[in-house]
Amino acid sequence: MSQIFQYKSAIRFGVILTACVALSLWLSRFIPEGYFDKVITPLMVICTTTIALGGAIIVFRHTDGLLLRKIWGWTLLIWGLGDGAYLLSMMSSPMPAMDMSAYQLTTYELLIGNLLGWTT
Figure 1 (spheres, rainbow, N blue to C red):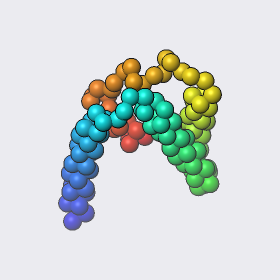
Figure 2: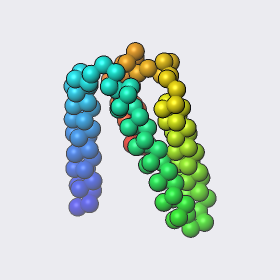
Figure 3: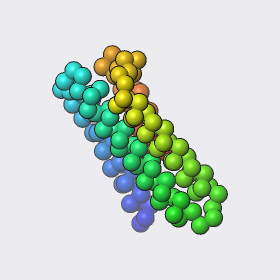
Figure 4: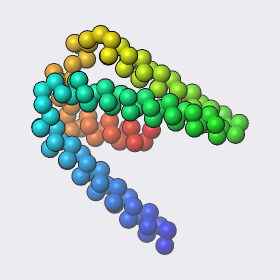
């Protein structure tokens, strides 16, 4: 019975993933020029920094001496510090080389990036 539930969960996940990608592609047409660079990018970096640093704290509190958890905790900590440094540099000085409005991600890049992020 549990295998049937897992199979249905995989189908639901695939349907939800397809719907999210299609909805994000459709909604991306309505984002005003410059809004992505000034609002959405800093918000995404703040969210990933918070998740990485919060995850590192949780992992370090529950390592129980396991080396793999310590490595994962250090990875999350370095990831969070790196994103925090990027956020500070983005807020303190203009970065014309990182202007996202000049480059649009393809559907393939969005799918691979999302799958890689969710897998991680």
